[in-house]
Length: 568
Image 1 (cartoon, helix red, strand yellow):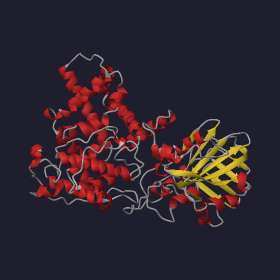
Image 2 (tube, helix red, strand yellow):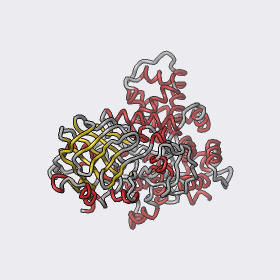
Image 3 (cartoon, rainbow, N blue to C red):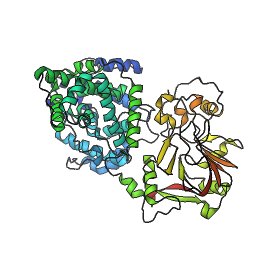
Image 4 (cartoon, rainbow, N blue to C red):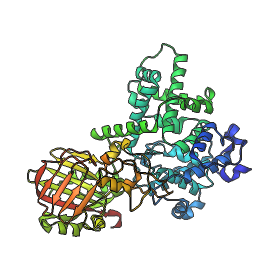
């Protein structure tokens, strides 16, 4: 049987018509446009082995972080345990938020395999803090994997996708919560009648929409979900929004057809249960093909629009302080209030700054590298103490008592690349902030306004983006050669984006007589060689207001490094 190779985990007795393969057995396609058309049409939908091979090809082509765990990593970690029967009694990580592994026509022991894979993923991806859809995706991919190790590799590549502007799974509570808000925005815009029904029948609409991902990844029957997966692996996250909107439309038709005029307001939990029951039983009234047809008949939902909504909603949540559902254990581990001492910030304030830094540094301990109170007011000594450390955190207290600073992603030694010429370096993970009089962070403008960036561009020492940044009169329409495969770094380097000269990426710069953070029509921070006088103003890179009084005297300056807590 052709399915033997990819059917290890499948309970074929539950597969219905999908248990019998038919249709094409080979696929000769390399163009994304062709894949997109074939996926929507269901070209490989009736052949289990071909579908597995296509999935493998699609997942292998996902641009990933430089270091992404693969099947060999899984085999090394599991070791002798691979020969033992996995146990479904092993609890799933907290970040799945209590969502179980759906059965999806799998053998009972396959659910236990999914538990083992997810727990291994948790160990390899410590930065994941909230990913409720992972159990469903893992169960689906087990169908089309030769063994657990291959499934682990496929899941890892999806999680490690780092193509700018493309996302496949939410991995933080902030991303997940903003996706729920974004779904509400899309429902209100493209599914008005159904949205009004939810508003009329549920006491808490937000509570109902919080389930939107589970409708697709969890509640849909396998035959429907696998057709969604066909398209999702080609087109990405926006497919989930489209399918969820279509499900809401079908639910509204079902409700108004059977209970016209009976829209009394219910407890939100009852509405959620009602929608869940409808979706689980949708196979009796809507075919997988009809669901996809409805999903892609919704016009105008573009990836750009979804991205803009998502970013706006994330910013809104951040301003409200809603960023985590559960305590981020790594932050608690990293900062010990009993041993932390700074003359500028308290342990609580440093903890707040720590919550802003990229997740991969969250397990690091703050390490004081330089302070003017000990090392004196010398820029050359500042450089000598900070060189070799990446990233660093700059803290400044002014004589007026204001506190501001910057997270700087790159080693200060990079300033030497420009010789005697002042040149900018760093990445889009840099940000500036102020703590007093009030707390506020200002990120790279492209993160908040992704419309300023377009296609990916290749890395290179002679990056024309740098020339455009240095010379505002430079050509704004530079040619963009194709990106070599696998050359995408996870660190938001400017060469990943096409940026016009008005929105340049001037992150950090240093010379013998000054350090600068943020450029373009001004500087977020300018510090002189004696480290006693500074200037702050709006800059194009961070689109920030002045971080304190525009011209200020420095009372104290500290530079902090990030010491790997796990290495001690």
